[in-house]
Image (cartoon, rainbow, N blue to C red; front, top):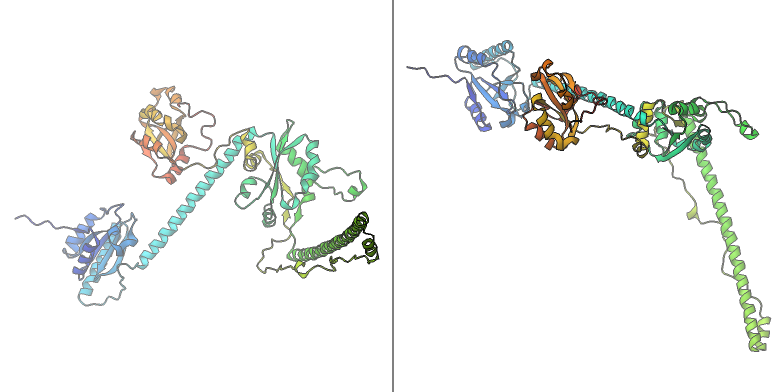
Length: 563
C-alpha cells in the first residue's frame, strides 16, 4: 500500500485562513515564513524544512507560507524581499528570524522546539513573548538598520547626482565661452549703486560700452547661479546686504580684441586711478583700487544700534523741518488768500460805484461813499499744524534680530574672475543677449532611461525613432553586456557601417539610446523591437546613462546624422 504524501507547508491565501490556523493550532509550534507578493516566498531552506518537519519534530511543527499583503497584523513585513520567519506558540510570537543562513536557522529552530517541549510540560522558561502585530527588539533593530541603509543610499544617490549636475553645469558654460568673448557683466550691491556712474568713465576710456542694465532681486535661490565659480566674498554680512534690496547688473561689450574678463578685473580690482587735478577732489582721493575704495566691513551690534539711533534723530529733525516748511507755506497761502479776498471786495465796491454813477443815482452813490469799507474775511492764518499730522515712530528693538559677525568684507561690486563664471552669469542675468549669440544647452535634463538593442536591429531602431528625434538625448553604438561594462564603438549607424565588420563580434555590440520619458510614445516604439535592456525607471536610468554617456559626449561628432 502506498504511503500518504506528507505536506510540508500550509499555504495561506487570506487573513481568515491565517487566523483560523493560529487559533486551532494554538498549542502547536508554528513556523511561518512571511513574504511579500511582489517577491514571492523563498525556497532556499526547503531541504532544511523537510528535516525539521519529519525528523526533528516528528511532523508536529506547523510550517506556513503567509503573504504579508493579505494579513493586516503582518503589514510591517510588506514590500520586503528578504524572507522573515516567525515562530508562534499560543498565538504569541516567540522568535523572529530573518535571512537564509541555514546553520543559524537550524540552531534557532532546535532551541524553539526545546522551549516548546518544556512549556508543554509545564515548565516556565521565563522568556518574553510578543503579540502578532508587535515588533520584537530584533525587528526594531532591523528596521532601524534598514532605514539607515535607505537614508545612506539616498544620500549617496543625491551626492552622485549633484556631482553629475556640477560637471554638466560647468560643461554647459564651457560651450558658451567662445561665443561670448566680447560680453561681460558687473553686479553692484544695493548699498553701492552710486559706484556705477562714478566708474562709468573707466569703461569709455577702455573702449567698453554698456549694452544691458537690469535691477534684479538676488535671493537664496539664484545667488549661487549668479556667482558660480566666482570669488565674491559671499559671507553672512555681504549676503544680508545683497538680499536687502535690488542690485544693479550691467552687461558690457568690448569693442577691441582683448581678453574681456582680464580687462574688467584689471580696471576694477588692480588699477589705481591717478590723483585728480581738482583741489576739492584731491582732498577725498585715496590711492586704492576701485574694489578697495567701495568695499566696507560689517559693523558691530553697538555700531548698528548707534547708527539707527542717529538715523532716527535725523529722520525726526527732517520731519520737523518738513513740518515747519509746510506750516510756513500754509501761512503764506492763507495771507495771499486774504489779500486776494480784500482786493476782490475793493474791486466789487468800485464796480458798484461805477454802476451807480452810470445810472445817475447820485444819492445812493454818496451814501455808499459814506459807508466804511468792509475788509473782513473768514480766512484764518494757521499758527500750528494739527496733532493728527505729527509722525509718531513705532519702531521697537527686536531682541531676536540677527546681526552678522563684525569685520566681514562687504564688496561694492563683483565681476567674474574667469570665462566660465562669466558665461554662466551672463546666461542667468541677460538671457536674451546671450541667445542672440548662442543657444545654451539645457542645464537640467528631463527624466530619461537607457535602452539597449542588438546591433542587428539598428536600422529598424532608426526608422522607429525618426518621428521622435527630439526625445533622443544621446545615442551611440557600444560593445556592452551591461551599462556599466561598455566600450564606445561609433556615434551613429552611418559611422558604424563604415567600420570593418570582420574585426567585430556583432553579438556583443548594441545600439544604445538615452531617451527622454516625458512622453512614453518613443519608449514604446523601441520596446516593440524587443530591446536587450531597458532601465527599470528614470532614477536608475539616470545612473545608467551617466555610465555610458559623459557630459561631453557628441561634442566632436554629429551623433544624429542618421536622421
